[in-house]
Amino acid sequence: MRASTALALAIGFATGTALAHSDDHDGKKAAAKPISSEEHAFGREGNPKKATRTVAIDMSDEMRFMPAEISVTQGETVKFVVANKGQILHEMVIGTEKELLAHAELMKKHPGMEHDEPYMAHVKAGGKEQITWQFTKPGTFSFACLIPGHYEAGMKGRIVVAAKK
Image (cartoon, rainbow, N blue to C red; front, side, top):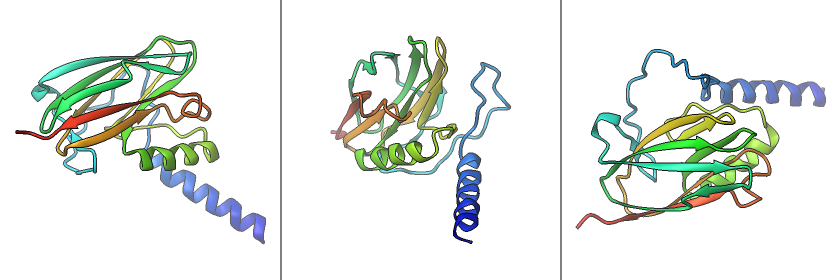
């Protein structure tokens, strides 16, 4: 009974998680989704047409982001163009340090999770993806690759959001 209960819970959890993620990363995008108005501790999805600047982020198999630190101003909408220069799958996930650590632990338990949240880019080797994000609150936030082992190897960075004057 215990094993079947654990299996049912795992399947239910994985199904719920899968609904929050997608594997549409082969360059063929489905119909554009409306921009989410959901507010997070680190901001909200931005409108690509209203991006005030574009920041290129490179990911490598050396488990590093380049650049690893980005400075923005509160209210700024940034389009991140995330390029995987490596030979293996990488991702960029924006969040608070606490949220990223919790998600990294979840990824260890469910390594096949695929991402479709507006603050995540799951990028195949040699590929590019975009994240457009509006930083609505000042503070220091993080970004990381949460594929098991990558975060622990140092694949993380930070975003410093200066208060609007």
